[in-house]
Amino acid sequence: MAAGPDSSGVVQFTPHGSACPVQFGPTLTTAALGSGKGYLIVSDIGATRNALIDSGVEVSEIFHLSPNGPVAGLDPERRSYFSRATFNDPDGNTWLLQEITSRLPGRVGPGPTAFTSVTDLANALRRAAVARGEHEKRTGEVDQERPEWYAQYLVNEQTGAELPP
Image (tube, rainbow, N blue to C red):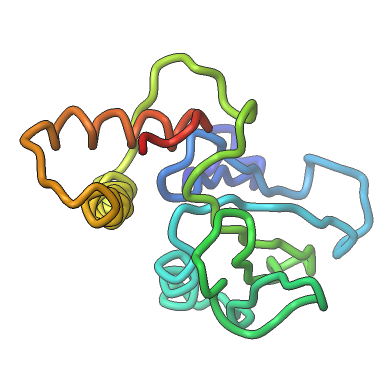
């Protein structure tokens, strides 16, 4: 978080692992206090929730979407876009945390990919390891091209391209 150099009271917050900052401050809008609603996309909703709680923020329990509406707990399949939690900022605006670990096709351009934190890369490697284990169970063979397979998996996951078999 960084306060504006002009002492305007504006604070810029960049969620962990994100390239998209959010600004808070009294001079940014004429909207009524508490009328704002926004999304913060995170790669690990449990870790983000814990970090917010450790910072003194009251955060809802994690829930996921089902055909019948919200259900308590993480999405059992850990699908992107399904697990969520909410909190209110000091002005009463509502923020929804949404866990996204892989983007839907077309949501991110096929350009360069990057991981902005050790946590994001480690989580991506864990997901790739699980996927690779499933691949080896299906094929019944272990090959020595794991680094290339992992690299392709990570790039495809970030860009929303089809994951390798």
